[in-house]
Image 1 (cartoon, rainbow, N blue to C red):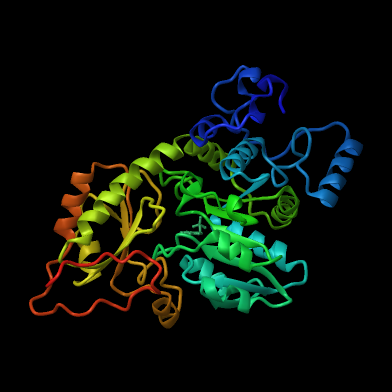
Image 2 (cartoon, rainbow, N blue to C red; image 1 turned 45 degrees about the horizontal axis):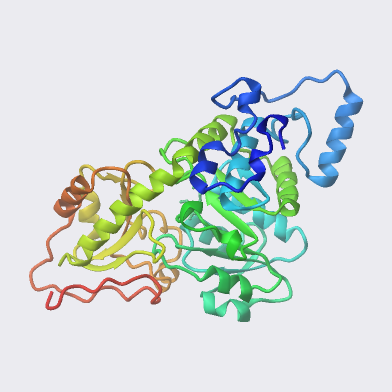
Length: 408
Ligand SMILES: Cc1ncc(COP(=O)(O)O)c(C=O)c1O
C-alpha cells in the first residue's frame, strides 16, 4: 500500500471506480494528476554492487524490482501502472504486459512448456494467429483440438495448458468457464478475454488461472496502440516477467500510458457499444438478407452474421463502417474472417470450427445506431433472385442462432 492512499486501495470498489483509479493511487502524493510517462531505456546507478544484487534477485525470483528498473527490458513504471490496473479489473493478483496479444500468448506457452510439458489442449475457434501458433507447433508445443465437452478426455500427463476464447473469435461461441476450469483439473486454464473484457466477464472468479488480452482491442479502445497482457497469480507472473526479460517482447511505455488511459473509459465504452450491438442484432435477426446472427448470451459489442449474398459485396459496400480487421475501437469495423482474421487457418479446420465463408464479423463502436443501421442495410446485397439457398452449416450449436422470419 502506498503511504498516500490512506488504505483506500484495500477497500473493494466497483469496476467503474477501479477503471479510473487503479494504478494511479500514488499520483496525488506525487503532486500529479496525469500518470507520468517514463521513456527511459536505462537507469543510472553509482552502486554496481547494489545493481548486481537486484539483478540476482530478479533472475532468481522474477519479482518486480524495488526502485527504478536497471534496464527497460526488466520493467517500466508506466507499464507497471497499466499492469496493476488491469490486474485489479480482472480480480487477479498480478498482470504482465507484452508488445502484443501474440507476444503475450507466446510468453505463456514458453512459460508452461519450459517446465518440460509440451502438450496443449485448445478449443476451436481461436483467433486465426493463435490457432496457427498452436497448430504449427512453432514453439515446440503439440496441440489437441477439441470442444469444451472433450477437454477432460483430451488431457494427457504432459498437458501443460488448456486454451479457450469465450466469446470466441469470430463465431462468438461461448464456453461455460466454470465447468471448463473444473474439467481441467490441475492443468491451468487460459481464457482469452479479449472480446468480453472484465466489464462483462472475470474468468479468474470462475476458476481460470490465466486471463489473456489482446490489449490492442478494447483495453486501448481507440485503434492506436498495440499490446497484450496476461492476468494471473503472482507466482506465474514471476515466470512471465523472466521470460519477457529474456525474450524481449516488452510493451512500449507510450503504449502502457495509452492503455492505462484506455482502461479509464473501458466500462462506459463497452456498455454503450454493447447496447448498440444488441439493437443491431435485433434488426439483423429479422432481415431477409441474413441467414444467421451470432451474439453471445453475455452480450458485448461484437456481432457476427452470415449473409445469403456475397459477403465481399458487404465489405465493398460499407461507407461509414470501416472495412478493416481488428476490433474494440470507438469506430465500427467489419471484416470477413475467412479472408482475413482466420485466413491462416486451414479451410477445413476453419469450416469445422463454424467459420463459414459467409460469415462477417463486426465490432460495433460508439456511433449512433441509426447511422450504423443505415450504412449496414445499404451495404447488404439483396438476396439474388431464386437463390434462397441454405446457409452454411450451423456453428456447433453454441452461438445464439437467430431464427429468420417464416417463409424467407
Ligand atoms: C481474441 C484475440 N486474441 C489474441 C489476438 C492477438 O492479439 P494482437 O493482434 O494484439 O497480437 C487477437 C487479435 O486479433 C484476438 O482477436
